[in-house]
View 1 (cartoon, rainbow, N blue to C red):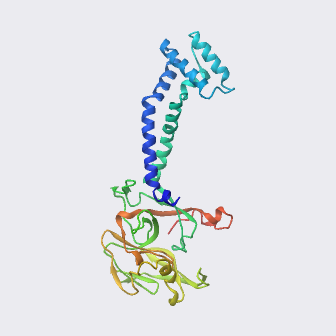
View 2 (view 1 turned 60 degrees about the vertical axis):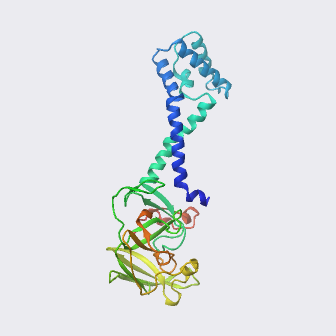
Length: 337
């Protein structure tokens, strides 16, 4: 299942292309014939050749699955009218509107799926895409089990699979919550907050960041909240980036800070040491989780290339706890600051 989800975009694109081929085959073959017969018989302009073609369709319908009790009167009437060269109408033309040959049914099934899959592909590739939050790295803003909707067009339109940008629209800004392809493994999607953009100089110290020499302000700190690790208390504070406020949390005790993230990513060194300044390269971003002590982010694996950006997180549309009757239903519809 994980492999399917990692390659879902490619698989969906291939499915659309395959169904489109069947749609073209159907449009030039069986569908064209059905439309012709319907138009001809309804207009009363059928020829003997048309009657013979329809008679063959009636025979095939009987041989391949039979005729339902509901349609049997219409079938018998159609047979009689064809034999007597009388006009057909209503349900007597049912077999001109529906596939009857096995090959025709096979082609029509995939042809009929084309528009459904195409609309899904179009919306998912260029407009919006849903994601599920898999961890606590973005708490308190996003919780494990939240389902969010992401705008695919906020930062420009990209081709699916190749991810080549074809239409620039907007720029990623500090403070944006962004879904991106994880740089060490682009098949995996990550969600973090962008705290610095290309050209910025950033310093991270004691749970607080400074961008271009200016300390990012924290306000309304609350130490009453318990975290997840052995009853350790977290400081929950309001952080302001690019004029927009959001909540972050970090461990009250400096000795325990980053322990969870370091254990989760022990195979890779901590790249961004406390109090050291680092410059973000142009065309890249520095991303961090709002749960500053339990987030594996740019401090471990480096910068996010602009080409890896998927979209901007908009709002929460579902929560797994709500589905299971465990609460948190009030999170549904909440916008992401």
